[in-house]
Length: 444
Ligand code: FAD
Image (cartoon, rainbow, N blue to C red):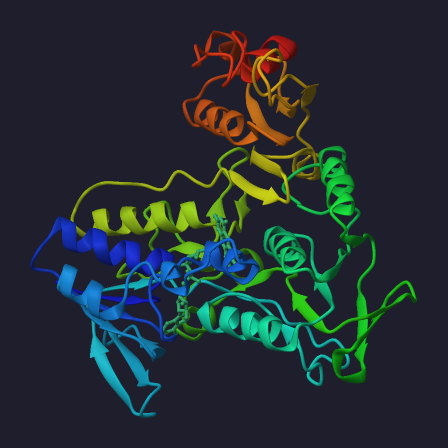
């Protein structure tokens, strides 16, 4: 069997490693457009901020290391430019020499990811210090700019995960940060009243948070930002983090079916419209685990899980992808925000009725130092007990509660099961009645 993998980072490298573990004979060729493979995308903002000091720590695997360890053919600085489905062949361009050649496959795995959105805002092309963040070269550019030019002011456009993480990390570098978000809240996976806690926190941390406003144009080579409201921002540095779009060019040109937001459509076996071609990661449309609708959730866990499933399937193991719950977490300065499942905004949009409880228990026993209240929100159906989703914001303990609730959802548990979860307790960690138990009692 000969497997060609397009993309050598989260989904691609996982597939490749699992393929080798399952079978020593498979011929594995992994093609990556960039210089680096298998790097830690999620760590990039923290390297810019300084929490991660060593650049090498971001490089989980190197081309040489991984090729040798797993006996595979890894070609970096190589771009797959065309898929010929009839001949089961891809065209690959060597970006060092500019030469193109063909490689045939028995199975093709697409894990090309998603690229940062860069809309045609007037003045964007003239903006000198405008950056997006996806990979190591982007990180190097931003870090070099911060180190060498020592910008005093930065504007981060977009209040999602990457925008908020960058706002924090630029503050860590002593830069005055303005965070501009078009919606009335940052962190879209949670609902407004939960995000309000974060709004207050980021403002306390010195971020100039501008909500319900967008960028109309850039002036003066990007030194001046004109907002839709008429407000103007002076800045030395711009981070554009307003979302990502699936890299669907190859799939589209090959006539594979696309879905929501142009994401590649796959079945539960992660096959595209062509059964010899699998697709995974940020590039694909997935089924929402809670409501069954098509969605696009670009996160690392799904990419990783899907990579394993595809490798299993290629080796005849019957494994299926059950959909994405969207469990997510982020550090927002001293606080943590975590969520799983659907929020109220999604359920309202789909016309699904639901109930909500908010509880604010301590992260651990109040009499033991260092406890903080957790704002914990549970969204559910009171009749059936179905858990639709949960959100938590706290200085401490939000991560654990959301992970427990995400597990409960995947385990098919209802709110009626939550009081019965017997969770670990000693005063430094929790209370005899854990916040998850409390949410369950409140919901019943
Ligand atoms: P990627 O990891 O992006 O890999 C795709 C690769 O394919 C790219 O390197 C690209 O160069 C290559 N490629 C594309 N087209 C071609 C082609 N035609 N030929 C050859 N190569 C090609 N997720 C979380 O869950 N938690 C986090 O904390 C988190 N933090 C993040 C922070 C940042 C700054 C970023 C950018 C992402 C973060 N993510 C996080 C998202 C996570 O990194 C992605 O969900 C995950 O990497 C998706 O894996 P993938 O394989 O689909 O795409």
